[in-house]
Image 1: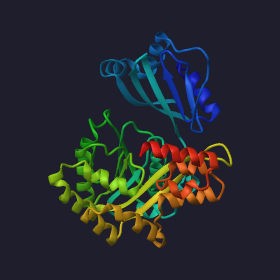
Image 2: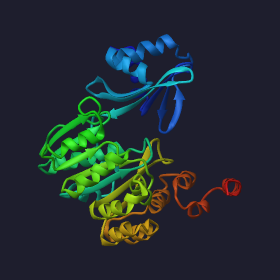
Image 3: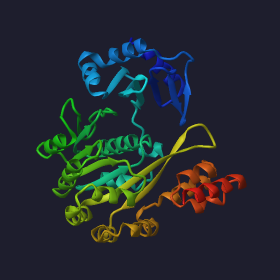
Image 4: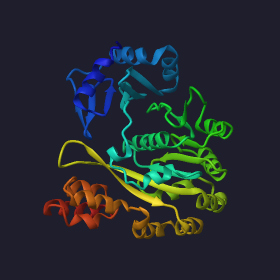
Length: 366
């Protein structure tokens, strides 16, 4: 048993999601969105170096010492895997660990709208699952991959950094590749997938021009590509994909994206007020001819109207999804207000003193 496992045991017992270790401060966990210390004693340099180097192993530790950060996955036992990020900070060593559930939840259990299954039935194109860090994108994508794996015979290749959810073959064959262990980068893994008789490719993160460009090309050539981006809604997602490219290439990229984009599932996690925990809310864009035309023209401000008007196709606007869970008493008006795009729509539900604070903050900001 590794020295650090005692901290992981506390995290699991507490039903927490993340462990934060930083030299010069007590160890802390994130539970239902809040960060709380798990002991008073601070972490010394000796303790930090000992427990981090023990699970990294000599080769990775040397790499971390040289580069100042490191990502990998650590398996404590068959029920507990962690995504690890080591970093150097002002006080010395630091690390953040995210518990990766070994049991992949279904889309139903996660409360993801039924229409998302339709994306799993596609034979080609680009589908993006987006949201801020820690909003459950990986969990939703794993559930969608599991749905495909259970119902269809496909070859799915994932390129991840690190591998989070481990999939066993059901009806599909799933090949999971880790950056930089199995492929030196996302573009290298994506290029290789084009030669590996894949039907579906999952790209863990689309963060640079080369990865996005290859994903678009792969989607155009008939692969079904799933990717993630750190954007909060469908409009920002489309803008981000295009803005990555130099201005002289943007018109061509808009044409490619208008032809290959099949959908966007944006996700936010909201703190519940009816019971402990958090719940996912989604904005859903299903690409149709109107969406393609808007992307081609570069008029993304019109996407909101298409989403609001596309309910019959299963589309859903983020503020409507937030409104719905607030009306059901699952989240507080304050939480809804903080996460919404159009703040004014939710401001009327805030207690009077909070609304006044919101007004003064708005006056200062403007």
